[in-house]
Every structure is written in structure tokens, then in C-alpha cells.
Image (cartoon, rainbow, N blue to C red; front, side, top):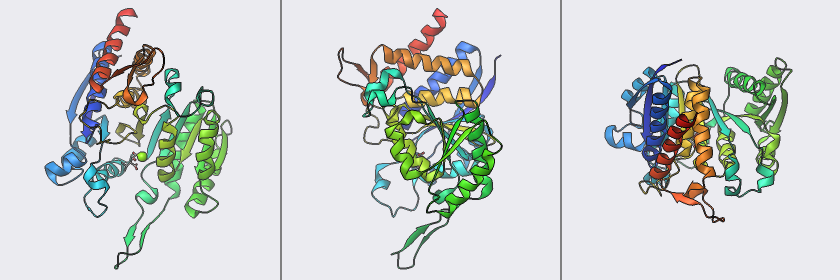
Length: 365
Ligand code: IPM
Ligand code: MG
């Protein structure tokens, strides 16, 4: 069945534009192959938006975002802000605001492990093989959005770590449902031995667990989870956690997939979905044709699957990536000097390779 969707592209900063171009190209190719009608619009966010309008999230971007069916986003950030914490207007504020405004409270980060990349990780292949984790990171609460204070003499600062019952409930429900459709295991990560907000978190998850007797629920402290994740990643199925813990754990987990350049994410709420690589703007390599476009391409696949329910289309993209990796093509971040050596490609060449394999897949099927 052919569908019609209106997709907003927000390339953002740093390597954002060069990788997002390939996520978009793959969506266009998919539309052609499967007879869907995808229309595209573009908008500014982050440093690019500050330069053009003074705001990291201009009203026009928010309006376009609200009208779209899904958003493909690149990254935000710029070197000039990283070492100057006093700057008041910052690129990241655009990302945080759009998450809040669109009610994107659940951030899904699948740790998808391509067999071909087992040797790209710094962890041992036998520890990694078979790992398949789906993170549910809460995205619109926690210290990210709690009250921020600085004393008058500027020598004391605080960020309020705060959760409300409904915020924990709505994401926990989504995580339990997902566990049901997977291997039936859910690990909720908190710091309930110290934090009151974590005790609320645990209480709510324990209550909900009664409604999901078919899901095996476990609770783990964040410090232990950070250790178990590299010790035995295979033991995890769905991991449910708060905003800050999830931010940190998913960067750690990216090493399981070989590189940050391989991980996609979906931020969802009750409306428009927002799809983005988990890597940042990487301004040190921006504009050099070095960035890995696969996370953006995988984000496009996640949009098709999670956002539009187009499973076959998403699968075809994953297969194309698998084939390209099997043929030994790599971007620098996932290349290894093995025998025979990998064929190292730039961003553009990798994007073109994926399109080539996508087109080829249609001819042979
Ligand atoms: C992420 C990023 C963001 C976050 C930054 C850019 C604000 O690290 O999406 O994981 O901390 O949520
Ligand atoms: Mg992060």
C-alpha cells in the first residue's frame, strides 16, 4: 500500500548536513522503489539557526515540525560554545526545546550489532556477538528540565533532578510493550539507593510490572548497569532509564555497535516522531567527507519502521548496509587494517554505495 508523508529535514550543524543528505537520499530512493509519496521541507536549528536568526530553534522551524509527519535531524553544536560555558544562547537549547515542545518523551536507541563490525569494537567479539538491546531513555524530564539556579555570587549552582509519576508511567508502558514484542525482559536502571526521584521511578515501574506478568522485570543501579553493559551485554533486552542516565549509558553502549557512527535513535511521544543519529556534530571532522552517514541512514530506516510502520522498506535498508559492510566497505571510524584490508570510503562514496545496493536489491528481488 502506498502512503503519503510530509518529512521535515533539519540538518543542523557540523557533520549534520553531510550525513543527513544521505538519510534523505535513502528515503527518496525508498519512495521511488515502493511507490510512496514523500515530500520534503527543510528547517534550521542549532548554531546554524543562531547565526541566521539569533535563536537556536526559530518559530518557523517549530511550526514546520508540528505540521510534519516525521522529522529527520542531523546534529547540533559548535566548537565556540564548548569551551565557553558563559554563552547564554547555545545550539543544544534548540534540541532540548524541540523535544519538550513536541512532547518527545521516549527516546528509543537500538543497539544494533552488524556481525561484520564485531572487530570494530574495542570489546572482545565473543562478548558482543548476539547483543541486541533496545534502550528507552526518558527525554523530557530529569535534571535536563528541572529548575537551574546560580547563587548571586556565582559560586554555587544546582540543577533539580525531578520526576512526576505520569512521566515515568508513560515511558515505562512503552518499554513494557516493546519488551513484550521482543525477548520479554525489561531492566529498569536507577539510583534508588540514593535518589528520591529514583525511588519514585522504581515504585512506578514495580507497580506497572504487575500488569505485565509475562515480562521479566529487573531493577539495577546505574553504576552496576554501566559495568554489566560491557561485562555481559547479551544479558540485556530492553533497558528503561531516566534522561541523564540514558544519555550516558547509550554513549557507552555505542561501543558495542563498533562506533557512534552506527547508532540511530527515534524520539517519540504522542505526535510527530523525531529521528536522529546519536552522534553529535563532530565539528573536528565536519566538511572533510570523513563522517559516517550510516547512523543517519539507519535513522531514516527507523522512521520508516517505527514512524510509518513500513517494515519491509526498513529491512531493505538494513540489508543494503549489511551487504555493503560484507563487501568490505567502511568509513574511517569503523575501518580496520585486517587482511584483506577494508576499502575506506568517504561520506559521499559510502552514501552512494548504499544507494547502489538499494537499487540492486530491487533488480534481484
Ligand atoms: C544526545 C545529546 C544531547 C543530550 C545533547 C546534545 C543536549 O548528547 O542526544 O544524547 O544530552 O540529550
Ligand atoms: Mg548524548
